[in-house]
View 1 (cartoon, helix red, strand yellow):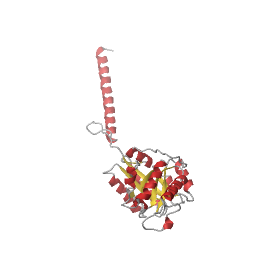
View 2 (tube, rainbow, N blue to C red):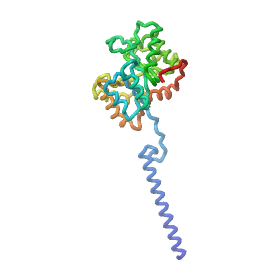
View 3 (cartoon, helix red, strand yellow):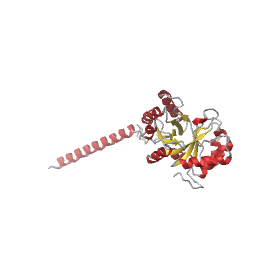
View 4 (tube, rainbow, N blue to C red):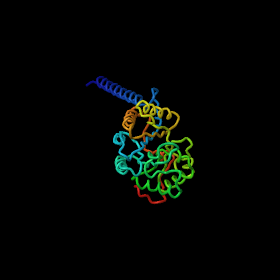
Length: 287
């Protein structure tokens, strides 16, 4: 082979190699732009942190409609289980097996409403300090694997400083936090929680206070709107008459949230937002 042919072959290889690497580089850049890793100018894009949503589903413990659908959702949810009811322990055990955070859905007296809706072991305004403590401790012992508590009804009790101070003291002693369902705008729960070194977790949105798919869908979109100006959102839904609708709307919404909003457990939220971890000072029998 002549020297001239050898030079031509080397040049051809160099050109082909350069072309291949250039094409590969172009492909990688196009992929990076399409995935949001890089902008068109070739600069790396730093992804915005995902907004966080914690969805709590209330009223488990009595074999209500929608319980199975909620427990089977392909995303993180949290369940609030009423104490002393037929499926209290069964629902708590199943939730724990599925890695779902369990809260005690503590019955508390409202300003208005039927007392027979409260359920057994309710906290009412006529109770002594000792009886309030006794009932909260009994509820904690009755719901296995509970890591927190929220209020069932309770618009009257959550505005009562005497009673809520006792409730929160027991929660702290037992290594639990309290989520204010915010059934009354005058609630003192968050204020007292901060004073006691507990995370002031407050519900932002009731998902299914009206029992229709259109309303529940609208509430999910309201959460998206809130997350334009805040990093986290707590929402409360329910099993029961509306349970299957709530589960269906949550399932439909999570695909729309992909890459923007992340559903997390309530225990993750209190740790990430308030850097809070349980520090019980008394033994607990509910784990």
